[in-house]
Every structure is written in structure tokens, then in C-alpha cells.
Length: 104
Image (tube, rainbow, N blue to C red; front, side, top):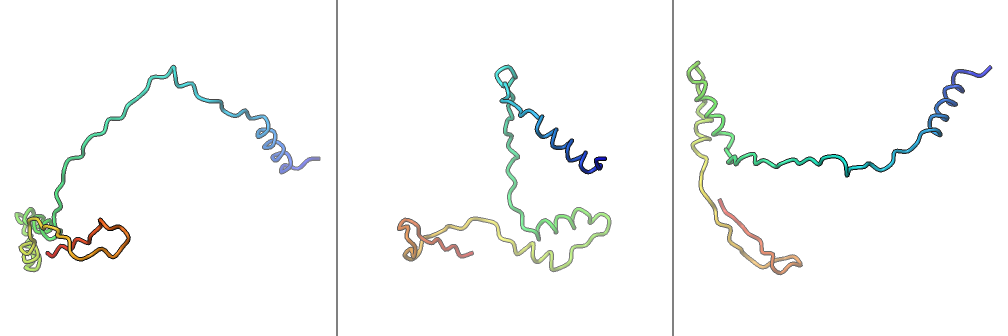
């Protein structure tokens, strides 16, 4: 009498042998679809201390008070631009690549 394991193995082997591979899809008759790319919008970088201070100010109506360290850190944030100036000779193979040091 055959065991359950051998019957299960025989059934799995039969299914594997009798399975027909899928042929190529006929995509000529199907309508095409398009996914349009949408801009997410520009979000400027905001330093964490400024965001934390804004959160404290938002909840000031319910008694939230920003600590002095957060106020000082938010006030110390600089806004503006820095110009990168090439300095020195390149130390690597590419002669057109110069290191750009930007003090801030």
C-alpha cells in the first residue's frame, strides 16, 4: 500500500510535468496606459531648531514655552548663500577636478 508521502510526491511530479509554460503575451490588442509624472513641489531646507521653535510657537496658546536653548539655536541659524571657490591643485587623476572648499 503506498504511503501518503509517496502519493503527494507523485501528485507534485505529475503537476510539474503536465504544466504548460505561459506563452508570450499579446499586447497589440490591449490598450496602453500612461503614468504622468507630477512635481511634488519645492520644499526648502529648514534647520531642525527653527522647526522646533515653530512647533513651540504653534502650541503657545495652550501653554507651551520654548526652552532658551531652542530659541538660541534657532536665532543662530544663518540664511544666505556661500560661494564655492577652487583652491589648490588636484591630487587625483582628473585634471579638471579641483577641490572646492567652502567656509561657512
